[in-house]
Image 1 (tube, one colour):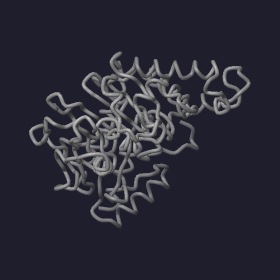
Image 2 (cartoon, rainbow, N blue to C red; image 1 turned 180 degrees about the vertical axis):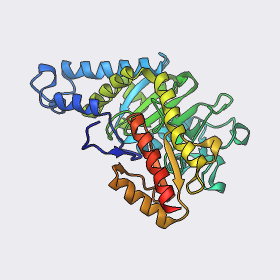
Image 3 (cartoon, rainbow, N blue to C red; image 1 turned 90 degrees about the vertical axis):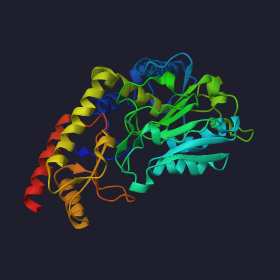
Length: 362
């Protein structure tokens, strides 16, 4: 990585691999001899259709998405899916179950209450969202139209280590911050959605992967652009899609192939997280925020002995080239987001900085 680049530990928009940025820069003003930037192309042109089709095919191959499911590229990011999911799905029975394990799943449940009965199937709020409830702690109703959970909680630093057994109730998952970091059995899910700004592309889009049998039952007042069936029928091109974000997703998918694919990325992810958690576990100064069996491999949350030292750590880390380590305003503390683009070198250097900071401040 060039010397003038920092290690960006932001929770999103997040770091993008430097080689991907270089490729995008090289093609910025004249994409492969077309005489145009991708930013300027008609989404109906053949040259852009090729970009779109290749990106979609690469995503399907890498996640091994079965033919029963459709890939949609939808605007509004993950947050707009908080509305789209109940608008399209809750009408089957009028009710849905939500696992409330952090801020975003809580926000999604509150949004769903506008369209039907949204019930908390579990909540980790009793311990400030520092853990993921076990399967036996989930209260899933047979009359639920779907069961909803957020796979990784960026604010609190927890991650589901298992796929909930819903007894046949369609499973809906917000995978915004850990998609493309591990193999996923897509066939188990009714809907997977993800804001792309963590591991997939620059901000501006959500990828939605939906079991096609669930589409077509949306609320009559659902806007066309939020209708899964309409978006399936139009192949995500009812209107102009987020063209450049889709192009960048394509570059990211090719980069992921060069890293050895998702299975290799999953091993690297675990190795990177272990380096930081080993520092926390060996320390009498730093303390991890999440319970050990629920720790996120994407967002490592921790604290020093007090708020003043938290602030000092974030300030001195930034001066040393480690940016965006301050925790979310809701949770406070510190947070290192270590998505796919964060190199192992950045993790090792941060770990060394943490040990040095502890020696100087304990």
